[in-house]
Length: 102
Image 1 (tube, rainbow, N blue to C red):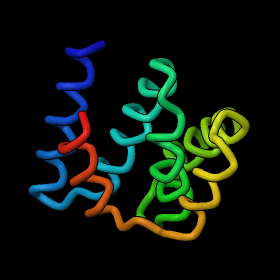
Image 2 (image 1 turned 120 degrees about the horizontal axis):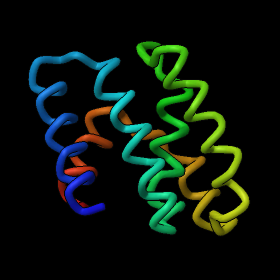
Image 3 (image 1 turned 60 degrees about the horizontal axis):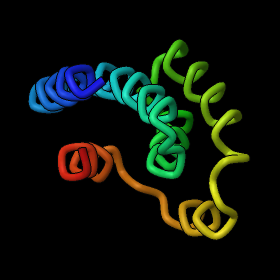
């Protein structure tokens, strides 16, 4: 899993550097899925919200993000969910968060 996280992070960084934002969003979905499997749903809740709402998210990414969001929402504490719902992160914020947190 650590190797997968490293590969996802590298992919996100490269796509971000050349501004291929649909690729950033798609890779972010797969990283979120991995983090959910590692039992870190609160970390990815706001990422998934962003992916679902982002205009450059491709259909496949949005569909998977919606599915993951439905599965993760009950696992996120209400206080954390309320906090995340109040602030809307930009894609740039999420990319920075990915590289700082993991």
